[in-house]
Each structure stands twice: as structure tokens, then as C-alpha cells.
Length: 586
Image (tube, rainbow, N blue to C red; front, side, top):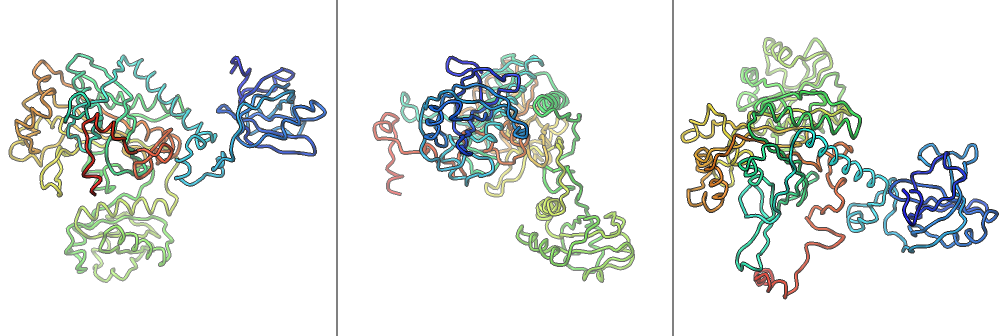
């Protein structure tokens, strides 16, 4: 890492460099005084090098070393020597050598850091975000951002080889309804008018297809004003892809190739392809969610028909009854009670259970099932000796939701979650879903999705039965990406927009530029957007994407470091033609 100031980085020197004169620069990571000899670990983003200040070697540098404190930035000039036998540190690349220092220059002093620059002493979240510039010095954070960088490089390498073109789309765009709230930007030169920050490049990448750029990709920043959680931020990065003259199969093949390339390049892991495909209906029925974790079993089993034949009123009257067979279970009554409490906290009316000892079913509810029904339950649930059968009976939506959560809870309690990467495609989504709050049909993904071709005829009279050419990519229970074959015909786009309540005037006002583009020969096209932050986080072993974003926001969408969002002075407000009287009065 030679520059005009330093000859090497702090993670570079090895035994082959012994006897060389070197100059290193970095931060004081730690200092130890061992019987009149001072040892300092010097750190930069490449690693650590041990510096030795020995008065027998150089008195002046030893005296200077006594002044050094943690996080001082220094320049050190010295000679590389091999470490003594028994003193080698095999945990670091530079562990076979140390540098005896002839002279140092303090480039900058440091106050006592409010957080430790140490992976083993992690500060709380607020402090980490407030002093993010210190948090980012930790070796773990450096490694994670380096992995992110390499992953981005691998993505570009793959798409370039596949003849895609990277095109940047605008950041200041027209406000259009796409599911979340827009961040809006006032226009100084056009009083009363606003730009929006893009929730995604959706409309622009479709227009690129109309323009003839048949294989597009981009790593765009996407901005959405929505409530936050571990896998969401106000701004995030996507791997955005769009292709013309394709079917769903082309998307599957392209994205599976991308994932395979990135994992092999970055983690040296072979990902098996093709990925499993599961219909949306099957995912909900077996796993309770449309983003199932396939690293363990515990699939839900529908026993509604058997349950309704019993004399157990809760089962007889329920819309749906489902069961999870927990094999080889030795759960105590106390542990079962904790599962009942878990179900109740997640809005279930109750959780019933039956144990099977290989011959008989044991539970307070067994008496409600005659011998024939008991045999049917054993067969239907594939119960074996020591199986614990857990049942929830309720409305179908509640059963699926609670059983889906219970499935994950059980896997964690039983340590069933393997350290693997299980991908799957979720397909055949409904085109629309019912919005209780607005009391109308809304798009399941977005309004630019092509319906199944043989179901287009149902759009006007039975839109709730229409399925879309939709697909989600799921990794270990996390939605990694979502995409669809797009509508490329103006007449079909108008029919879909009419279903969700947009009239002709609203269509032209909000999406006129897209519909006009469709008049001039739009090709069949489709694409997908993968969450790049999520992908990198999962590759690093995290669910929280903030661990792989350099400067994330907290759960209140604030940045404790720069204190954004902040107030704007009156001059700027006036220039943007904004008054804040409403906020002030409130």
C-alpha cells in the first residue's frame, strides 16, 4: 500500500519483509508497557501491526511512545523483525513480525473515544449511530463494508458478461402512487410544485424497454417514507433489473445465475440451482407466510375435515384447523404452556396439544375424538413415537398467521435452523388484494403487473380471481426480491387501473407519460428488484440491514450523527415558497 507518506498498510507485512525499513500510518488500537518496552498495535482498515518501542533500540522513539493514547493518528518509521519463538500471533496476517520503531510523528491527537473500537465491546445502538465514524473503525464493520463493495463489483461483473447495460435513472421525479409515501421536494423555480424522490425506478426502467434498451440493470437508491424495522430504511439500495422479449423463465434463469455468481465470488459457496418454486397458495397453506424459511420442516397440516367430525366444539365451529407435528419432542408441560402463551400473544384464541407415545394419544382433548378419528389424526399428521401435535382452530387468516410464527418459534427453541442458504421462488400471486382500510381492491405488488393471459377476461367482472405474472425471491424466510412481467399494452394497463379506482383523468394526470410511451410500440418486458442491503446483510449473517449500511437512520428515521432531519432557516424556506405556520401552531 505504498504512497508518498507510507510504504505499507498495517495488514500487509509478513516474514518475507524482515529487515526492511518501513513507514506505517494509522490509529493507536492498544498500548502495553512490558518491563520498560512499549508495544503498540497500529490499526488501519487493512489490519493490525505490532510496533515495538525499545529504549535499547531507540531512546527518542520510546520517550515519544509514552505520550501516545488510544486513537491517536501517527506515522511510524522502523525496521521489520521476526517475532521471537512462542510470540507469534496466528490470528492476524502480520502475526509473525513486529516493527521496531526509529521515529514517530503524531499526525493528530484524539480525545478519549466515547465508544470502544473493539468488536468484543459493542456499544448500544444510539451511541453507535451517533459516533458512527468511530463505529466504522471496528474491524467487523470494515469487513462488512468491504464485503458489500465486493458484492456490488460481482453484480456488475455478472451483468456486464450477460450483455446488460447500466443506466442511471432520475432522483428528482414526478410523484406517483407506488405503495408507500413519497418524500417530496419543493421546486424553487416552479412555486407550488414538487418533485418526489423515487421509491423505485419502476416507470423509468419500463420506459427504457420502450426505448429499446432490452437488458438494463442498476444499483439505484430508493427512498420511501414508511415506518421502519430491521430490514427497512428510508433509503436503501436495489439490484434493479429489466429485460425485453422474455418470459418468467428468463428472469428465474438470470437471477439464479446472478446469485450463484455472487455467492461463489464473495463467500466461495456453491449455491444449488434451479431454486425450488412454490405457489403463493401453497406457501400460505404449508408455512403460513409468503416468504417461508425452508431450512427446517415443521410444515402446517390441514386437519379441518377431521376436526369437524369430532365433538370438540372449538374444532367443529372453526373455519380452519391446522396442526404442526413436532417430532421427537420432550417438551415439559411448562414449555407447552409457554407455547400456548406465545400463540395467545399473537392473537390466537388458544393452542391445543396432543402427545403420541407410539401407541396412544394423550391430552385432555383426546376424549373428543373417537378411535377412528384418532387413527385419522395419526395418519394425517404422520405422527411417530414422541411426536407433539400442536393445533390452532380459528378463522383461516388467523390460523395461518399464528401457525407461521409458531413454526419459527419452535425451530428456534429446538435449534432446527441450519446454517444454510435456502432460496425459493414464490409464484402465482393474486393480482389484487383487499384493502380493509380503504375498502377496495389494491395491487398485490404494483399496478404495472401483467395478469395471467387466460384470466384477463375476468378483470372487469371478477378481478379478485385474477392472478398476476408475479414472483418473489425468498432466502431463509426473508423476501429478497420481487418482480413481474409488466403490462406493455395501454388497454390492459387502463383496465387494471380502473379496477383499483383510478379514472381516466387520474390515469392521464399521474401516469400519462407512461401510457403515452406505450402508444409507440412497447415490447413485452419484465424484471425484478432485489434488496441489495438485505442480500449483503444475509451474506454477513445479519437480519438487520443497518449493519451493512455506512450511515443508516435509527428506528425514528433520524440520524443521531448529523441530527437529520433538521430545521431549515427562514431564508431557505422562503426561497422554496414554504411556510411552516401549521407546524408551529401544532
